[in-house]
Amino acid sequence: MKYIDVKDVSLTLNGQAILSHVSCSFDKGQITTIIGPNGGGKTSLVKLILGIYKPSSGRIVTKKHLKIGYMPQRFQVDPVLPMTVRRFLTHPADLAPLNADYLIDYDMASLSGGEMQRVLLAYALQNNPDVLILDEPTGGLDVTGEQTLYAHVLDYQRQTGCCLIMVSHDLHFVMKQTDQVLCVNHHICCSGAPETVSAHSHYQALFGDQAPYVHHHDHTHERKEHA
Amino acid sequence: MPDFLINALWASLGVALLAGPIGCLMVFNRVACLGDTLAHGAILGLSLGLMMHMEPMLTLAVVTVAWVGLLGFLNKDGTVSTDSAMAFLTHSSLAVSIVLFTFVPVGASNLMEAFIGNILTVGREDIFLIYAMDGVFGVILLWGWKKWILIAVHPDLAAAQNMNVPFLRMLFLMMIGLFIAFSIKMMGALLVPAFLIIPALAARPFAKTPEQMAFGAGLLAILSAIAGLFASYEWDTPSGPMMVCTAVAFYGVLMIFKQMLRIKRLSCFKRNQKETS
Image: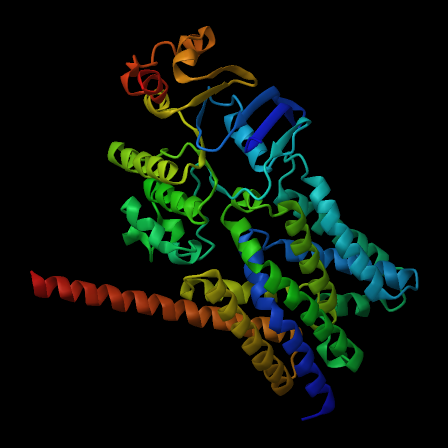
């Protein structure tokens, strides 16, 4: 049985159709990237998977006893709430690999965007999740911070073989590291291995200009063929 | 000490015991004004009870809980914000209850007592009721505290951990409603909300974690209750307002203390800079 199976799911919020007839699945060891335009329903799809939203129709079957780590889109902690990073995290030691252990006694409300992202990633990772869901994890990070974060996430994925689901605008990363790409714009306009998706007309229409040329020499699927 | 004062002391301690942590949760979730809304709903419930010759505590609790539901209904789709919905309920229940009180014999004195309470008429049953409430709500608070704090950080983080956020929110609001309903006799509808919020605000600058803040607020609430009660006995002033005044005084003193600490730290910093340069 797959970890997460989304079966013909539609979502309507306050009378607005957000997603219609979405089917996709996520499994152990698989890296999925969800791309698509703003307001296309990427975050809604993630929230459906997490059970934060209930589908208006269709259903989502999740394997029992899965531990899920979730990093929501960047947000600010309200300064009315006193909360140190140490109090927020169960295992503050998780900050070290992200070069963020200096944040330990900081107040959550005083963190910058990039610092917040690293604390949130440490939070998502703290129970050794089987499924790691990251919603635009590199928002607010500079190039180095972005690379450190991706490297850490991929390290964790490689070590544990967890199922990794990411919402990302970073097409370069998408094409290089991902097993499955879902392009979401109220429905799934195209999906599959990165090279299939990038050749797809819908993808071209959405990302045509900015889609980077990618040479596939380091892709796992190709490596398998050579072996 | 006279009997009525001992009763009053036990009753106000019972109210103060949970006012700290509940008030903190209200501040964290930005529903500080909700206390007023529910208290005004409670006055409406009281006037309905007196008018229809029903047990006022019952009608009061029913209307307060109903107001929590109504509030959720009013801002269901987000086009009416929570604060507007709260204002609407506050003002409408106040207007309706004042009109209703004119149909109640000796309505005016009833109305005044509903607004500012009368802790000196508290009997043994009232005290028993308050501590029973403390017991139940204490257990609920211990069970739900971490969950409510996580919701205050970000509701999605809580929902992703299989917490039923709408249910937890509703439970929390119901708890505030019932807390206010049960405390009105001691402190009055206009003052219970103040007693929830002011100690929490006074504790905020000294707290690094929500737990520290709840502890500090609880301590301040208890001190304000005791000091306020004795001050009201000494100077023959109404007890509910006196307790709130004491809490305000604590707030003022702590703010000044905090400012002085900051100035001292700043001057130390400047002196160090001079010495190094």
